[in-house]
Length: 112
Image (tube, rainbow, N blue to C red):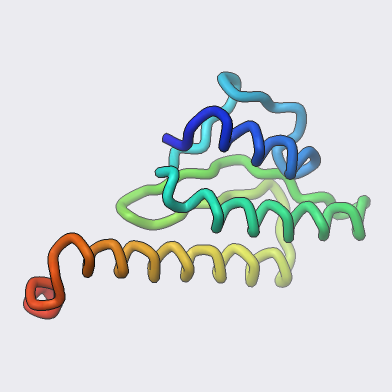
């Protein structure tokens, strides 16, 4: 779970995206290591929300499931889908890098 102070920063950055939620009422079920990725995604979607107030995007679920980022919204657009797909790809690369560091290159290659 992301630390409360990091969650609060996401809530403050994504006031429209996450609504009036606060720490404790709604949780990001993700590790701290993906905070920077979530923050960039939040900033990008919040920017979209500011530009297109009639097409606002709100988050429903933000979590990691089986090593993959799950970021569900109540509404979407091709632009938002690309932003989310990019964040998922960043998470995948980060996890591969962490796996390489933890297991070493020999074990990672053997698992492929």
